[in-house]
Length: 217
Image 1 (tube, rainbow, N blue to C red):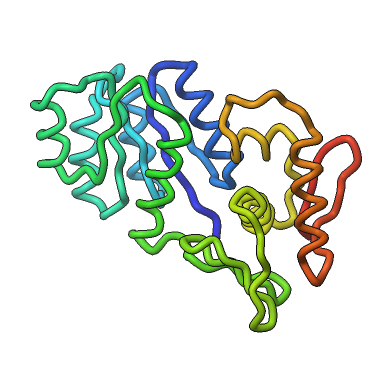
Image 2: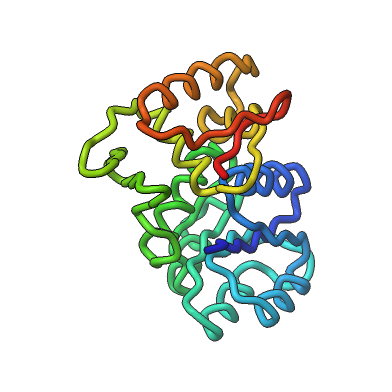
């Protein structure tokens, strides 16, 4: 199932970096930098989750959250530079699910997104592909009743590929998702992990796309 996220943020750098990171994780991201446009979007679309800034051109984030709550129970993360108690309390009074203050670590934001999507039932904790079962909360892989001993990084890479089956993920996309932006861009890092995954899995499901990356069909 396609997971659709609304990202409302007027800082262009934050908007682009968060959107890129969420898309690398396999989500479809609808972006906007204006509160009035965001109000139109929540009336025209159904989202699995929304990330909303408070200080926006046009309608502010509090009003967007309040209107969204009148429409449905979409999980909402408020992403704001306002760290005062008043704005946080107001957000939770309007039924925000989480509140993240700037600056923030993008990997932690992703984990909060994943946690909210799991709690809302939008994503499964279990993924199945060609008889291989991946249990995301336990970092376990089972094939025909037998556990496959993957490391945490190997599991995360396999899970990322399975969740994006049919889509070729570049080396940098995989690196940024698994390690965040603090990596040295050595392709060999991912190549070693892929080699180990292939050696451990009883069936070969990972296709190499030369000079680009990897794909699960």
